[in-house]
Amino acid sequence: MERFRYCAIIILTCLSVSAAASPSDSTAVETLPLPELPATLREPTARANYIIVHFWDAMDFRGTVRSRDRGFMEQNFANYISVFPYADEEARREAVATLLHKAEADSLAFCLLADVAEKYLYEPNSPMLSEDFYILFLEHLVNAPLLGNKTTRLRWQLEAARKNRPGMTAADFGYTTREGVRTTLHQTHSEEQLLLLFYDPECEHCKEVMASLQQNATLNRLVAEKRLTVLAVYSGDDRDLWERDAAALPADWTVGYETGWLQDTGAYVLRAMPTLYLLDRNKRVIQKDVQPHQLFMQ
Image (cartoon, rainbow, N blue to C red; front, side, top):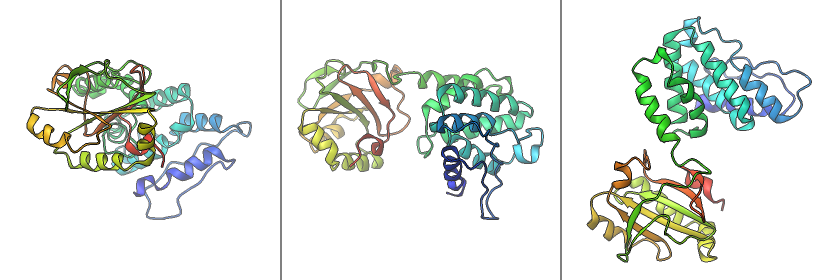
């Protein structure tokens, strides 16, 4: 996509000694000039820290032509966020606070920025999806008077995002295996790691992901070596459907049926199917809402 085309230029700038770059395509969306890096900053993380904190220095949010232009804001937000993985946590927090403070100069621009952050960092199908980065925005946005009633939804998002975070013990829940045994997540035997997979048998994307996982050589090797346990859980109300589907899943996977209690209680917020968690043997979360391609490299 065009809005991501410039991201690579910024990332390369963070890690090299060049101070600025501009897109060569005259039809491209306008991009903000990169901040001029102090010559003393040579280390990649320090350079990335400086860039994200000063990324919007050239932007006047009172100049509404650009600040209210969704295409402009999306392009530059994507460029900005593309540098976050190279910066440290303190700099990310400072960068978000600095951006939102500047954006308060215009209420409509501020609301647009909040929408763009949600689109890029929270929507399940976004290639830049990042709960970690979105939390940094939410912690400010939930108390933003400019957003009015929208803060109610944002507070719910923040509450959901804070559940089952990496390092936390995953919330327990009960389920019935395809062998008819009633057990819980915490009682489930796991090897070095446990891949917890919430799925829907009628979900086409779930079918694609499940097929991909079954063909993943690394996953199969780890399961065979007793280093990984796979627990696939259907949380729904059609047990007959689940039983028909469960029988076709790999014999070395644990497959369970959950009646929907975990969603009703809010223990897990399943915004998209499938949803994957990687846990350690003690059921502590290693990765949350992880994408299949991020789990195992072939």
